[in-house]
Image 1 (cartoon, one colour):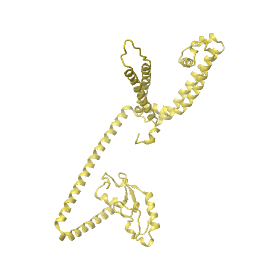
Image 2 (cartoon, helix red, strand yellow):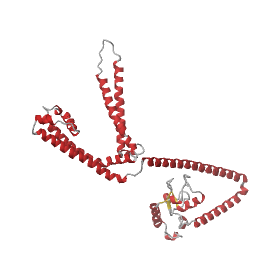
Image 3 (cartoon, helix red, strand yellow):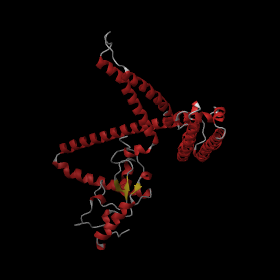
Image 4 (spheres, helix red, strand yellow):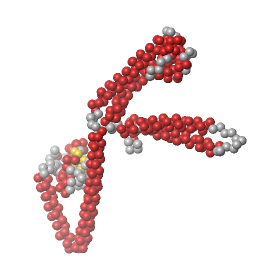
Length: 379
């Protein structure tokens, strides 16, 4: 709920869940009330003392009512998880699709139902026991739809309104309203059915188990790769520390030789980068060295975080969400196919072009770098 924020309340099942939780809390509260009352009043009472237990017994009765209703809600919550089963998915999707039409139908049913209930109450309330009160009249009319017959009593008390109300309610309630309800559900089923995958329950279970197996294997592989990367980084750090110690022991007389050797190695490495990039078809079209940026302040968001140079073809890394120059990543991939910030596996095809940032950089170059200081020309 905290992670989803307000979007948590956009799902109808979450309201159903909270209704279920609140019912449990209400039942628990009602169940504790008698114990609290007995503790306050003292139990058992003295032989000559009278204590009114109406209040705690009322709480017990209400606890039974709430827990009975909540048992229905708890079992209905199973549909939240069974909706992924093909048949259950058809049932739940049908009810969701027909919800709007069912609401309009319920409004029309209430108008007709309540109108006939008042009519029966006024016409037969004083003579027929089944219609003596409004609630009992509502129940009696519902029982008429379930094949309970009050026609003889209505005929004996009113030869005109008895048959008129009986046939009117039967024809309108049973043959019209109930068939409209069935028609709404049938239309919803026909609309939903094409979107439900036609797979058996066994196939769905097999697919779920296969997917879970693949996810587990992928998680284990990522863990192993992460440990391997950590070991490689640790080994590299240890090697660097050993090299530093050796350089310090060599003394100042070998410093120039070490620097010259380091420069030679860097030049050789750059040459290997260029050859490998050219062979793979990843030749850089432009670089920040195409410009003389002396005295020009470049916005920080336009600089490559690894090389501190102006980016010409920025790309976004999907794992670390960092933005670097494409050529920088091409050089990095020659050493290892990973994200240089998180060391997670990464490939060239996973890079996401930052077209908006690229456009901003090009616009900044046009407005801030004079043409004579663009040695390599613009794009």
